[in-house]
Image (cartoon, rainbow, N blue to C red):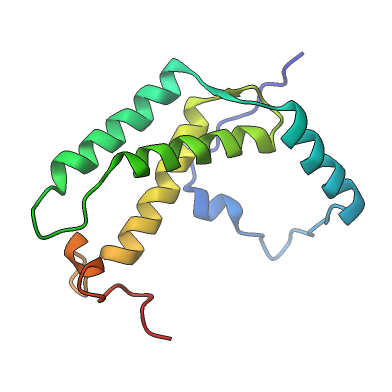
Length: 140
């Protein structure tokens, strides 16, 4: 029997923060190892049609919006990575299906990753930055 969960409309970054009044209850390491082993062995999530459409729409939007000769191309590798992230998200919940909610969370992760890496000082997304070695995380 599946348990219905309320949909939280806060951004993923906000949902991941631990509030000052919240107490963190960590999972014992032995149990976590068993959980991961079980998940790897028995859970093989597949995309639902709705999740596939959400990921495809985002991917096609990226490809059409940020296509130019001198910028980093948006390739099928980005789509494949979004699918893998969605499957990993479903696997964490031991679900056999990647839901629309999973797909939306994956898009949030991709947006954060892409925008953090490729946004210039003025807030404009510039995929050319990675080719010139000017991404935010290149200096250590």
